[in-house]
Image (cartoon, rainbow, N blue to C red):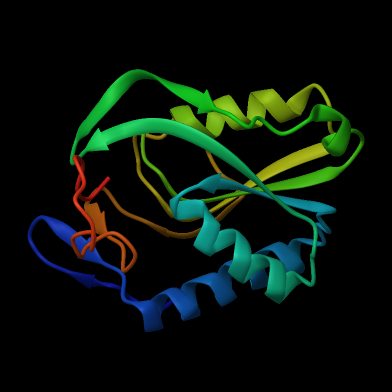
Amino acid sequence: MTEAVTNAERETLTWELFGTASRELAEQVAESGYRPDIILSIARGGLFVAGALGYALNVKNLHVMNVEFYTGVGERLALPVMLPPVPNVVDLSGARVLVADDVADTGATLKLVRDFCGEHVADVRCAVVYEKPQSEVRCEYVWRRTPLWINFPWSTLPPVVQADVLDA
């Protein structure tokens, strides 16, 4: 496993290192023998992970689920909330689903999505770039475990348009 850059308070994932991380994550999935029919991305950070996994695992069927939980650095809602449009369970019925996200922090978002899928799919597994020790979900596929806040390459620069929330 390749090491990410760390400092006293944060871990930094660069675009180049994300390429390595996503490839190694895909290799874990492939080596386990799991063959997902669908990759379900948790937007927004999971979009990057799902796209990379889709190409590496040769899965063209990608879905997106929008979940709001973080509102800022270390700030979150009491519970994660699914935002519309919510995937149609008919599209997931009987499928092997790989849920992709950038980080399992508390695990609440992954639990919400996994539980949503659980009643309708043949099998659901989770793949994340990072998993934190406090996560209530233990993901089947994890590139790296860390207790630190992570600087992702897609969320460290300020938006090019006015925004109310940075780094979430």
